[in-house]
Length: 155
Image (tube, rainbow, N blue to C red):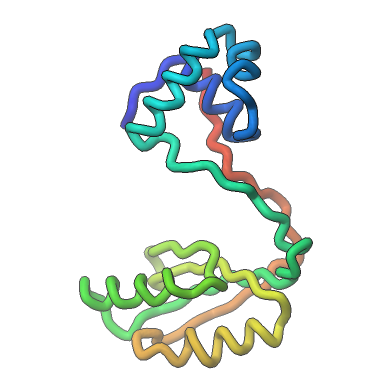
């Protein structure tokens, strides 16, 4: 774990919510000089705390109307199986998130598609036809109650 001081935490809290802030904007809000802000951000990037900057899209506005949560089990368990399955999942644009889990299933997926027909195609032609997939259970979301990419850093 990386040691963060209060200035680092303030900077990170700000840029997690708006990565378009200028160094001067951040300096004005944190009481740290713009040069120090630049240096701190550069360091946080170099040590991997900041992995990148992205634009977050509204799924509905780009036609992604269906969000499914899929629990699935594999036919066998081993390093080769895990690697092959995870490479397959990484290649599928419908899969937004994938978690290895413990319990009744091996993985939990978050899948976004335009409509139920696209979901059926993904499920039947791609996911369930994969030789490593033994079982699955799907749930469709009704609405998103909370979504954030920001980690709360105590100051």
